Image (cartoon, rainbow, N blue to C red; front, top):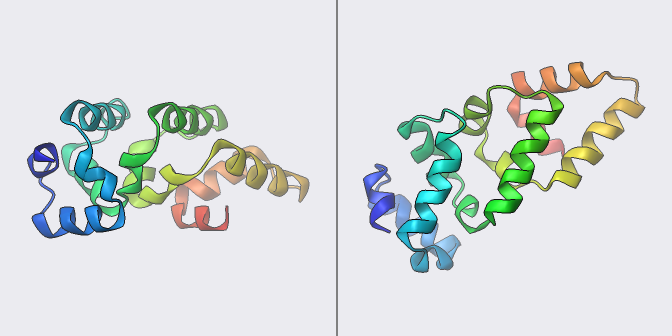
Length: 131
């Protein structure tokens, strides 16, 4: 948990994170660094990483494979600034790829283009709550 402090996450926030997800307490520094590295590879700043993890501690409990599948799905759909998307709405990291597929496919069935859907979600990340 030292790594969480090093990211600049406050003691109060860390306590809240552990209350919601007690398994974070047992997370080793190597696993935390892997989560940080995933976000760094998306050009997330240290401040964005602290905001993402502090706001969405569930991210730390997800498998790296599942997270990377989601990231790849979003990139395949046309999202380019995932650092901004995740900083704006960190809970996007909690979705499964099939949920994104279902949402996009439903909107396409309603006559929208993929490009319009991505632009819409990119400009208003809280629309992901409809997923």
